Image 1 (cartoon, rainbow, N blue to C red):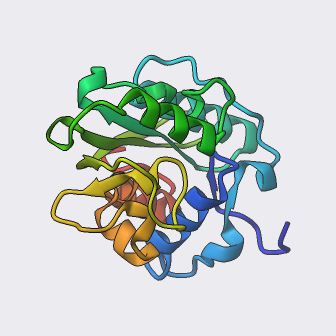
Image 2 (image 1 turned 180 degrees about the vertical axis):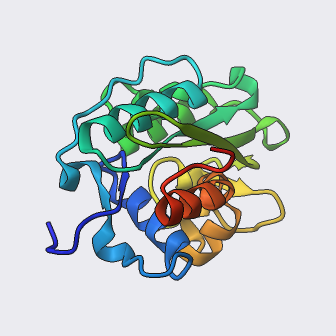
Length: 214
């Protein structure tokens, strides 16, 4: 860990998510060095938190509150996933473990595409959904939601991003999320929307030590 004291923990071990948050915060908060002071759960020594909630919002709050209490630092957590229209919103909160093993992107993609093999383009609507929560030690939290609508492709395209990015083509785009640059993706993504909505609360807590309205 850097000699510079961390100021904010992202409750994840996913380096893609950490990179996205750092880029969103870069230059937004005076005196915050995002590369050393915005850290992930592993760097903070935070425990894994079971996702026992039944909604994205519940899971994000569970993780943020637990990591804030464990580390003594403000914590941000998100729960996100893919909601497919013809699957009734599945995989939803089970997106990261749709094929069984948590975080096996290739297996998750393979299973999802097999399930939709006979579904025509006009019925392949889907959305990435994210709920992002901010919690502070001792109590106080905020949660925001973002959504990115699109169409599921028949096969993966692009080498960027992670998770289901290679198979979701955002509305109005000709590329998959995995073919967008990081900057382009952050500008429209579900996680970018939710994190940007949290920015006023993040700035307030890092500057004043309190959430808005407290």
